[in-house]
Image 1 (cartoon, rainbow, N blue to C red):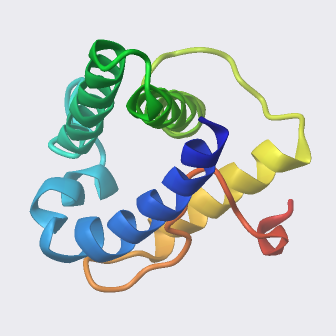
Image 2 (image 1 turned 30 degrees about the horizontal axis):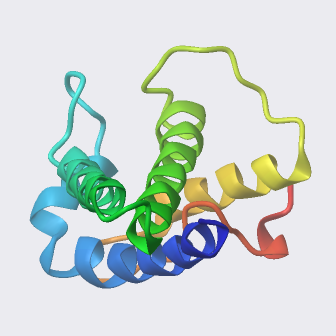
Length: 138
Protein backbone atom coordinates (compact mmCIF):
# COMPACT_ATOMS: atom_id res chain seq x y z
CA UNK A 1 0.00 0.00 0.00
CA UNK A 2 2.75 2.45 0.96
CA UNK A 3 4.61 1.80 -2.29
CA UNK A 4 1.42 2.50 -4.27
CA UNK A 5 0.78 5.67 -2.22
CA UNK A 6 4.27 7.00 -3.04
CA UNK A 7 4.00 5.86 -6.68
CA UNK A 8 0.72 7.77 -7.00
CA UNK A 9 2.53 11.07 -6.45
CA UNK A 10 4.51 10.35 -9.62
CA UNK A 11 1.35 9.32 -11.48
CA UNK A 12 -0.43 12.46 -10.27
CA UNK A 13 2.52 14.69 -11.25
CA UNK A 14 2.62 13.16 -14.75
CA UNK A 15 -1.14 13.39 -15.28
CA UNK A 16 -1.31 16.92 -13.88
CA UNK A 17 1.49 18.16 -16.14
CA UNK A 18 0.74 16.29 -19.37
CA UNK A 19 -2.99 15.58 -19.23
CA UNK A 20 -4.60 18.27 -17.06
CA UNK A 21 -2.35 21.01 -18.46
CA UNK A 22 -2.49 19.43 -21.91
CA UNK A 23 -5.41 17.85 -23.73
CA UNK A 24 -7.41 17.63 -20.48
CA UNK A 25 -7.41 21.40 -19.92
CA UNK A 26 -11.08 21.51 -20.96
CA UNK A 27 -11.80 19.72 -17.65
CA UNK A 28 -9.00 21.18 -15.51
CA UNK A 29 -9.12 24.81 -16.65
CA UNK A 30 -12.05 25.75 -14.43
CA UNK A 31 -9.89 24.82 -11.45
CA UNK A 32 -7.63 27.80 -12.22
CA UNK A 33 -10.42 30.38 -12.09
CA UNK A 34 -12.63 31.39 -9.14
CA UNK A 35 -15.19 28.66 -8.52
CA UNK A 36 -18.91 29.29 -8.88
CA UNK A 37 -20.85 26.74 -6.85
CA UNK A 38 -19.70 23.60 -5.10
CA UNK A 39 -18.26 21.62 -7.99
CA UNK A 40 -15.89 22.06 -10.92
CA UNK A 41 -15.41 19.99 -14.05
CA UNK A 42 -11.97 19.24 -12.61
CA UNK A 43 -13.69 17.09 -9.95
CA UNK A 44 -14.24 14.46 -12.64
CA UNK A 45 -10.57 13.50 -12.28
CA UNK A 46 -11.25 12.59 -8.64
CA UNK A 47 -14.31 10.57 -9.64
CA UNK A 48 -12.18 8.73 -12.22
CA UNK A 49 -9.50 7.78 -9.66
CA UNK A 50 -12.16 6.82 -7.11
CA UNK A 51 -13.63 4.37 -9.61
CA UNK A 52 -10.20 2.90 -10.34
CA UNK A 53 -9.55 2.51 -6.62
CA UNK A 54 -12.97 0.93 -6.06
CA UNK A 55 -12.35 -1.52 -8.92
CA UNK A 56 -9.01 -2.64 -7.46
CA UNK A 57 -10.43 -2.94 -3.93
CA UNK A 58 -13.47 -4.92 -5.09
CA UNK A 59 -11.55 -7.27 -7.37
CA UNK A 60 -8.87 -7.67 -4.70
CA UNK A 61 -11.46 -8.76 -2.15
CA UNK A 62 -13.21 -11.05 -4.63
CA UNK A 63 -9.85 -12.62 -5.54
CA UNK A 64 -9.11 -13.61 -1.97
CA UNK A 65 -7.47 -10.42 -0.73
CA UNK A 66 -4.66 -10.39 -3.27
CA UNK A 67 -2.34 -7.59 -4.41
CA UNK A 68 -5.16 -5.71 -6.15
CA UNK A 69 -6.64 -4.90 -2.73
CA UNK A 70 -3.39 -3.27 -1.59
CA UNK A 71 -3.19 -1.31 -4.85
CA UNK A 72 -6.77 -0.08 -4.45
CA UNK A 73 -6.22 0.95 -0.83
CA UNK A 74 -2.97 2.73 -1.78
CA UNK A 75 -4.79 4.73 -4.47
CA UNK A 76 -7.61 5.49 -2.02
CA UNK A 77 -5.22 6.70 0.69
CA UNK A 78 -3.47 8.97 -1.82
CA UNK A 79 -6.88 10.34 -2.81
CA UNK A 80 -7.74 11.06 0.82
CA UNK A 81 -4.41 12.86 1.28
CA UNK A 82 -4.94 14.82 -1.91
CA UNK A 83 -8.46 15.80 -0.89
CA UNK A 84 -7.36 17.00 2.55
CA UNK A 85 -4.26 18.91 1.45
CA UNK A 86 -5.48 20.26 -1.88
CA UNK A 87 -9.24 20.67 -1.58
CA UNK A 88 -9.68 21.30 2.15
CA UNK A 89 -6.48 22.97 3.36
CA UNK A 90 -5.53 24.94 0.22
CA UNK A 91 -8.76 25.64 -1.66
CA UNK A 92 -10.95 25.62 1.48
CA UNK A 93 -13.76 23.69 -0.17
CA UNK A 94 -14.80 22.68 3.33
CA UNK A 95 -14.81 25.67 5.63
CA UNK A 96 -12.52 24.89 8.53
CA UNK A 97 -10.01 27.00 10.35
CA UNK A 98 -6.62 25.71 9.34
CA UNK A 99 -3.26 27.36 9.80
CA UNK A 100 -0.33 25.18 8.83
CA UNK A 101 2.24 24.78 11.56
CA UNK A 102 4.59 22.22 10.05
CA UNK A 103 7.26 23.21 7.56
CA UNK A 104 6.00 20.44 5.27
CA UNK A 105 2.45 21.80 5.06
CA UNK A 106 3.65 25.38 4.64
CA UNK A 107 5.90 24.24 1.78
CA UNK A 108 3.13 22.23 0.07
CA UNK A 109 0.65 25.10 0.27
CA UNK A 110 3.26 27.62 -0.89
CA UNK A 111 4.17 25.47 -3.92
CA UNK A 112 0.51 25.10 -4.86
CA UNK A 113 0.01 28.84 -4.56
CA UNK A 114 2.88 29.39 -7.01
CA UNK A 115 1.33 26.76 -9.31
CA UNK A 116 -1.90 28.73 -9.47
CA UNK A 117 -0.18 32.05 -10.13
CA UNK A 118 2.26 30.82 -12.81
CA UNK A 119 0.47 28.01 -14.64
CA UNK A 120 -1.33 28.13 -17.97
CA UNK A 121 -2.74 25.38 -20.18
CA UNK A 122 0.65 24.74 -21.78
CA UNK A 123 3.11 25.82 -19.11
CA UNK A 124 3.38 25.60 -15.39
CA UNK A 125 5.30 24.70 -12.28
CA UNK A 126 4.77 22.46 -9.24
CA UNK A 127 2.60 19.71 -10.62
CA UNK A 128 2.89 17.45 -7.59
CA UNK A 129 0.26 17.39 -4.88
CA UNK A 130 1.86 15.93 -1.75
CA UNK A 131 5.52 16.74 -2.42
CA UNK A 132 7.21 20.10 -2.88
CA UNK A 133 10.92 20.85 -2.95
CA UNK A 134 12.57 22.84 -0.17
CA UNK A 135 12.74 25.68 -2.69
CA UNK A 136 9.21 26.56 -1.52
CA UNK A 137 10.12 26.70 2.16
CA UNK A 138 8.34 29.61 3.84
